[in-house]
Amino acid sequence: IFTAVEMAPRDPILGLNEQYAADTNPNKVNLGVGVYYDDNGKLPLLECVKAAEADMMKAPSARGYLPIDGIAAYDNAVKGLVFGADSEPVKSGRVATIQAIGGTGGLKVGADFLKKVNPDAKVLISDPSWENHRALFTNAGFNVEAYPYYDAEKRGVNFDGMLEALGSAASGTIVVLHACCHNPTGYDLTPDQWDQVIGVVRAKHLVPFLDMAYQGFGYGIAEDGAVIGKFVAAGLSFFVSTSFSKSFSLYGERVGALSVLCADKDEAARVLSQLKIAIRTNYSNPPIHGGAVVAAVLGDPARRAVWEKELAEMRERIKAMRHKLVDGLKAAGVQRDMSFITQQIGMFSYSGLTKDQMVTLRNEYGVYGTDTGRMCVAALNSKNIDYVCQSIAKVLS
Ligand code: PLP
Ligand code: TYF
Image (cartoon, rainbow, N blue to C red; front, side, top):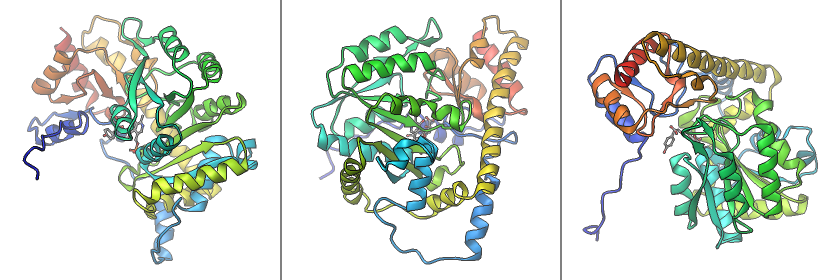
């Protein structure tokens, strides 16, 4: 029965991890996958997480099934983070939130639900986007196309192109937007550009799906969440997927969420009931541990303060590395202006290097980024930065 099954291509990003693991170069540096490492090159275990887990260990509990939509305290904490605990949408009860298996799970539950309510809609993602956006919405049964986003020459957003594409999209088109810290380019919209996008979304009756995988990695939790407030103020209904993989350094626990802002409380109850069907038929209910940890941190003011401090440290370290990268490239003899790296935001830099250059960087120097030229700035540290700068300089010379 499997003779006709073809070999599927490797995930372009996760495939790099395998190649990196097998590389014997002692100087190798993995800037491929989007993971934050501390200055010692270690995946951090946040103090707030450690403390919450230590408390949980003091009073171990049995593991029954969670409700389909997850831990109530967790869902409420997510609502607070995304919309603001005292915001009108939260207070009026018109947000439907479910605990999801990572940000990916939030996207998938939303996609499955959308396929039921709007089966013929097209999905628009940014060009380029996180590779899984296309695959995920395609596998949910949608026709996926892209709107212009990155302008290589300008080193920024092709905003006119983006606006035009959204403006000519059919009513009901689902538009996937990166709420902050665009993956892979590192270029976000300005507040004024968001206002214009919101204007088109409203005029054309598009369905916004905001992917928030990096809240807190741009300018701060509230600052990065401000875009949500803009969509709320415009009176729109929309989707938000949340990921805590990066912001809590809980990648393997798969902690995420999906929130749907509805017109009123009654609508939110009906939407929630349908989200639960999407969950029930996929995996029945989410796992406990990661959600319990995040809920314990977000629900305790002292612990939350520790988290905010640790998140700020990660954010600031990435920014410092961006400056070190620009300075280091210059010192290593790179002639071209690389200062755009400090204008980019979040974990990634679209370096402008070609595929050939990225392959040379990988094969000859053991410095791993994606073929598209994306490098994870969050994996640079004071020990590997010089080597990375010198390697890039050699490839560019
Ligand atoms: N969306 C974007 C833009 C991402 O970069 C990621 C990366 O991990 C995700 C969603 C998925 O997050 P998670 O690992 O929590 O599923
Ligand atoms: O873009 C990245 O590197 C992260 C991690 O299938 C990731 O978002 C990459 C690929 C993937 C899942 C997560």
